[in-house]
Image (cartoon, rainbow, N blue to C red; front, side):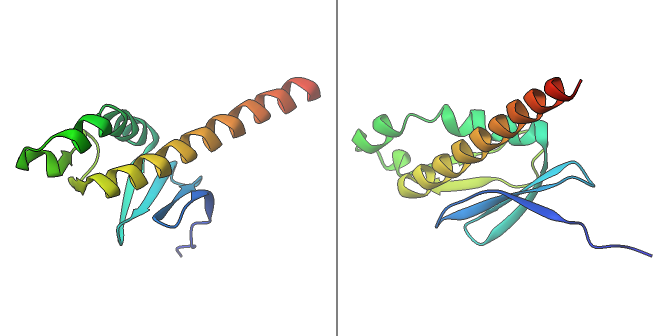
Amino acid sequence: MKTAATLAEIYTTTAGAIYQCDSRNRVLVHFAGQLTVLKVEAFLRLKRAVDNVDLEEMAASTARAADVEIISVCGCDRCYVLTLPELYAFKELLEGAKFAMSLNSVLHECLSAQLA
């Protein structure tokens, strides 16, 4: 008998949401109408790849190739093809989720230390 996995919302914006599935140790990224299931390591690689995109340079460039950015990381079965506004929204979503995950980890460590 299968049971439904409980998803915890990590962070949400108008552009999407990030959820955590503790039973499968996965992060679910809901962005641009698509749901992508990632291991935590793949999520962090995706965030690094998005952080490495220079949004200012992309906005200032007049080259046609600068209109979109293709982002693909190991461990992710999806290839993101994003425009500048989509990249900005995606970066905000990933940054917020990473911050919430880090804050939760720090709080958990502090509470565990106090109980010990």
